[in-house]
Length: 175
Image 1 (tube, rainbow, N blue to C red):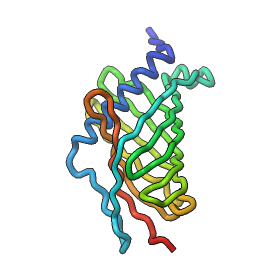
Image 2: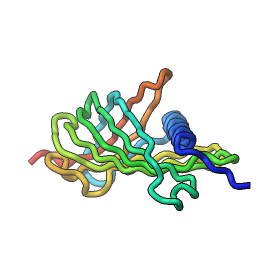
Image 3: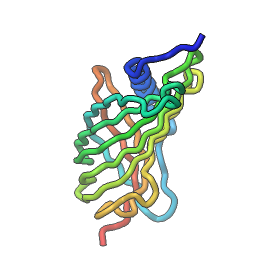
Image 4: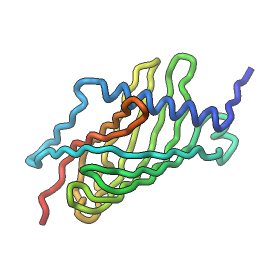
């Protein structure tokens, strides 16, 4: 018998998968990024708020595959002040505890006094209960004073659902 999930069920499971991935990833050792070359690695931290909104499936294939689509809005604070828009695709965890999400996120703001935009790409995989999460700055996506930005971000979710980020990045010296 084929199981069908409503969009609310799939979206709820996807959000749960995302939270599980970021929580366990934040607890894992060895998640720092060292950039190659002479550029100095910088560090930015702070809290953020996020609101994710489930979207309806565009077509029967997307619905039959139990792929949920969500959009989101973030407000960044701390060393990164700004906003972002997120588009995410995800599958709910299956009976063996496996699932996946991918997302693209356009960030607009100021990073330690330098303004511009950049794109983050997320890949979260739950493999039989073992999570991995990677959030990287898309190559050559920085604009304005953030041109040349590279880096990796970690997300932490504390008790009570408070979100924060830990961003290791490199950025060319100001010209």
